Length: 183
Image (cartoon, rainbow, N blue to C red; front, side, top):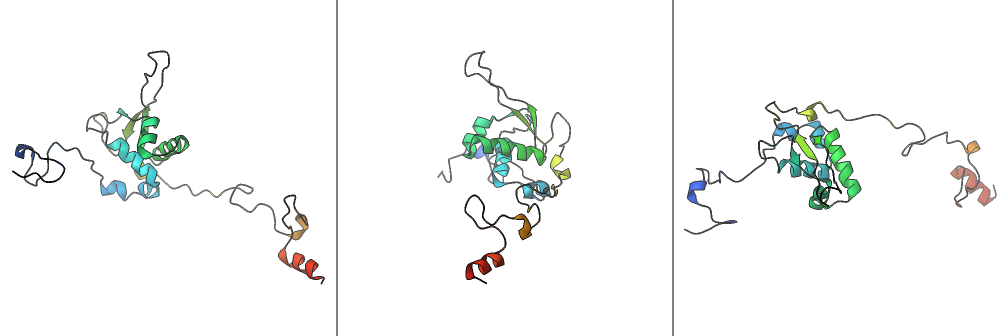
């Protein structure tokens, strides 16, 4: 019998559709992908959720181990980005941190425990899925005056200096043009 694809499989392991009954897979329902929370996630956060999901074997939800170091290596991102990506996935309601990881230096150097995660889209502890992502609402709070991205104060020429300390011109454009041209 000829072999096709990634490898030869025993015919006893293939169902009537030609699929192996032992090949693991992830069911990503449209209820998840159509949610506002999923659509708002960054690509890296979606990949992180799928990284946790691929470790789910159907019975270990709530104790799915994935450390920040493993995630950082698998996703090819830095430490700061890894922390913010885990936070984003949690804030959007897809992951719950069940057991905080630790790295105990005193008990056998190099021994540690990875953080254990729960996927809210899957049943856990014989209870139905929590689906926290369904109740997620995008935060629409406006930034306060004086923060990055806002124009603080008023724009009148009375409050601005003629020249700032970095050498740029202050005031409005029409006054600078008049003073240079002599009018």
